[in-house]
Structure formats: C-alpha cells, structure tokens
Amino acid sequence: MTCHRQARWQALAQSGDLAAAIEAYVRAFDYVTFAELVRYLETSADVRSDLAIISPQDPNIILWMGLSQAFVDALAELLKQGRVRYAPASLLTYMIDGAFPALPIAKRPPKRGYKDPPLASCVPAAWGDTA
Image 1: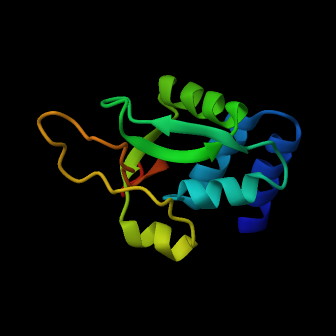
Image 2 (image 1 turned 180 degrees about the vertical axis):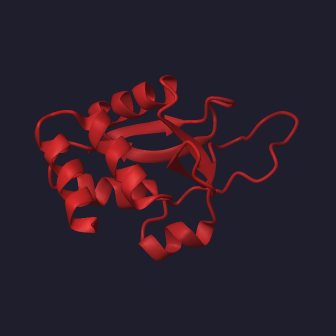
Image 3 (image 1 turned 60 degrees about the horizontal axis):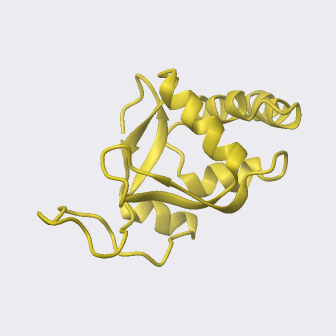
C-alpha cells in the first residue's frame, strides 16, 4: 500500500501539481516533518530555495526555511482551502530527521516579541489526524 501511495504523490509532483503532491504525501504518511516532506518531494519537484514559512499568528516566528516559492505557494493554498493544517511537533521529531535549523526555539513569546526570529516546531498534517 505504501508503494501505491508513494507513486501517487510522486506522480502528482512530477506532473507539476505540487499542492496535490504535498497533500497526498501528508495524508499517506501522516505527521511528516517539513524536512521529510522536502527530502522526498525534491526528487520530483522544485521545493528547495531560500524562502521561509512564517507563523500566521506571529510573522516573526519561522516554521521552516530553505523552501522554494512553488512549495510555499502550494502549502499556502492547501492551508487556505483547509486541506492541511499545522500540528505541534516535538523537537525530537526534527532531530531524528537530521534537519534542524540553527535558530532559537519559540517557547513562550515575550511581551515585546522575540528579538531574533525563533523556530516553531510544527508539521503539516491532514485534518482529522491527531498529532
């Protein structure tokens, strides 16, 4: 079953439908980190560059970085349509994936905001999935 699911998201990415590929991968493998998602999609689509995804609640909090405009736009479309959501993630999850940016970790925002942008540990998840 995993091979069939893998072939679907890969085919979607190769056809240029990055939003559908991201959604298919997230639904197929559940609770995937941005690092994992990028690592697997980059074999079929342009997903790496120098852009970052920021928190919708606080533009000074970075969710992930090193992404292409196509990836950022596709994920924004999925979020807007309610097809995926952000779910909290353990820092250990990213450490296991071997990809952890050198940024401070957002924990409890100070009253005056963060001096330097921190990283919030989260993952893209399908609605109905539990984190």
